[in-house]
Length: 398
Image (tube, rainbow, N blue to C red; front, side, top):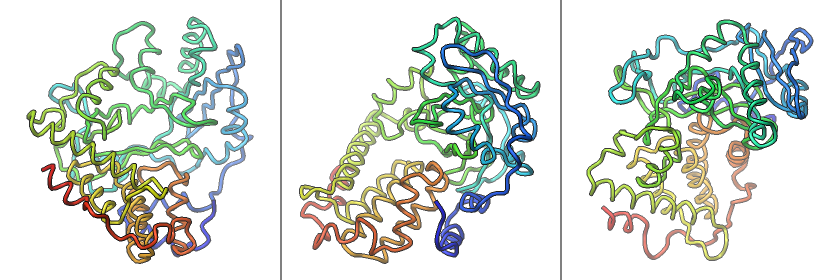
């Protein structure tokens, strides 16, 4: 999608906390010819092959264990959009360092003050594996092909990949992939596991101070700070849904093979119960604000209450979604000023947390471009508040 009003995009970025290099996402790039980067194809079976581009990202290299269809639709045909000569962004080397973290082993700790919205990691995966292989290819063959994908990487990237921690279970490469991979969208929704060697070193917290997104157009995984992080503080991301209750989080986190000891999980019992009630209100308000039927009780007041709950629980990784719902709520009652204000904030957070130019991003851009032409405009006529105020409901749960 091309933005019609480039000045609008610039103003959005200028008034947000987003790193200005993200503006590249809105511009046409100049790419190298695809034929200058040959992809090696080897070890094929049952419709899956190992594909390796050893020159990708200035010699970092990348291996895919996937189908020819996925390569044609997403990588090979548009490879020039996945390779950016002269723009190989690595980690912000002065931002953090590896350090032993009590109860967690090795983690990444801030070396200096990191402001909210700072890009601290931008990297491609070293390996991507199609998830359907687990059910369509024998385990022996799949493990062999995964080892071949890693072996085909340039030496430095191969050693970096194999140096990641596993759980000490079974095949070494499989163990590393299971422990460190992220599920991402390549050709279809959530169809691949991707291994990012720097991001994988970030430990989990249920109230993280960082958030990541994956751009399949450039095969780039980016990590941003969601609030100010001070020297000596650990950088964290959430491996699970951060709006889950304590018991739900505890069940999900066991999949990763550890018990969470973050600030939210270590709360005293009474405070933890209050936090769970807040999670219930967040879900209730979110469902109401997404409901466009005549039964919905959604109002701007409810949207403002939702944002307050996010702040109370330090759920900064969800702020973009909250601001977008608030923009819709104000637009629905013809409050143009506040709709644009909330949409602008949604854009600022969304540049860091949403998939590049996905449906949510496009929705906010359309509202910013012409609020009165947006699909939400005037959809909840004559509804400014509802009898039982969300703020009163929040107060009763404190």
